Amino acid sequence: MDKFFTDLQKPKKPTAESEDAASPDKQAIPKGVVLGKDGKPCRTCTSVSAWRAMIKQDAATATTQSPSPTTTPTTTTPTPPTPPTDCPPDVEDLGRSTWTFLHTLSANYPSRATSTQQTEMRQFLTLFSRLYPCWTCAEDFRTWMGTRGNEPRVEGREGLGRWMCEAHNEVNRKLGKREFECARWEERWRSGWRDGRCD
Image 1 (cartoon, rainbow, N blue to C red):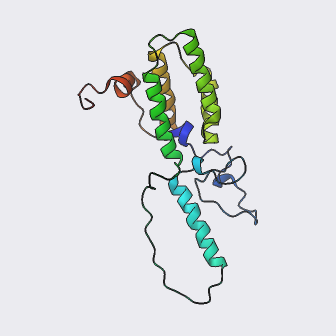
Image 2: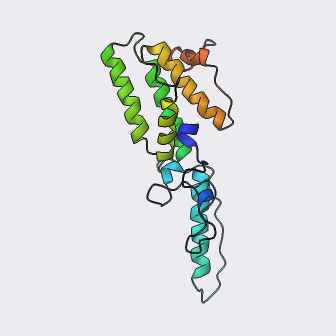
Image 3: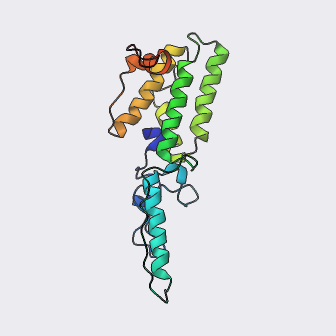
């Protein structure tokens, strides 16, 4: 999910790629690992594959730095392709879950929202863009929403649903993914596909 919720590679953000490689006291961080505002790796902002690469690198460094009096054969356990479901989400899982929630929220928004509902939705989107666990993703979403023409359209379900689709497509473009046909957003997120496969 994607640019707002999975973009890991922005030079202006602290990432493994932007760290000073010449600094001897800094350990190289694998590509794709995003650092939190505290300068430590941010698990929620990093994909599971990049996180595992970092852990593997840390383990290898610890092994080579500790003296071993005897050599014992070791076996390598293959890393499962996806973590168990009871592990903290990586940036990709978080993004997918978030988009599912946001699209479903839009699909269940009133067709004509009252002024109170419109205010609440604007407030929600503003707070959401500040509280989202992946701070770089949250910042990107705030920036996108603040761009002229990208303001949330909260007058009713149709406007909000299309706006959410456009936001998601912005992410898809930046990640090189296929864009969704926004004319079909309601079929995807509210009524179900016309071919009946959701019935």
